Image (cartoon, rainbow, N blue to C red; front, side, top):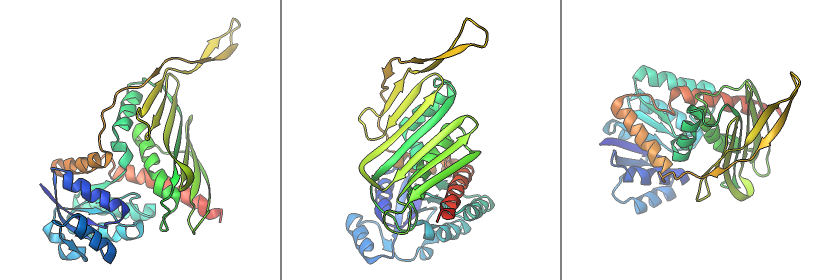
Length: 325
């Protein structure tokens, strides 16, 4: 089993720790937390796992580190862990900017360690199903992707809604399209409360592919939908629905007219198919993929190359938001 230390036991860290305990591939050796209330909670919920305050004291006793802290702290922890030769699982985003992300990637290569960013949604079985459809040509050419990831809270103070939420969707788009590097990008956001944007609308274009992502902490309803339009079929992925994926045999057909060069567009409304996709825990899938990469010494699907592409988009968007202040 892979001996792992988890650093950070907040909202998401609690979930990660539970999955590490469930996994047959990891042995959670230590939980690291400096907040007294969180330390007490960790000791109560996981009495068999030692809770310590300084990760450097026990770093030499583990094979890997799971970093579940706020972004402002994760960079230095990751640098320390990789310098010590430890494989790293790190919460998204990989870093606050591309320059810091590139430092992490450079060190990972120098130390020959696995760097796995928890781009959680690419380990979702529905996303993998859609990926197969795209790769097999079932959707035809992808024309547009429209995503809403909105809810009422939780409000974060360290990063804005785009960095917190859209990072998932950008990673999914990159995964589905086999890499995504937009030629055009624009974003607007507003600060309803606090100093960070609570809601953002991000628009991107690469070739003829158009992408729109709505991220919000201030919606009265929780929505997790992805609509993908192709030249052959369209799909809607609703992560909150019982039947999460609907495949529409619908689209626009081009009808050639009697005169050369004359044509018209005709809508086509066909059947709706809802495939059975067995439930899998995305976080557990992510952790076990990380374990597989450690054992086989192979690059993670959400490793350095994807991380840098995602970070470049996030930084581009973040710079536009800053220019609007």
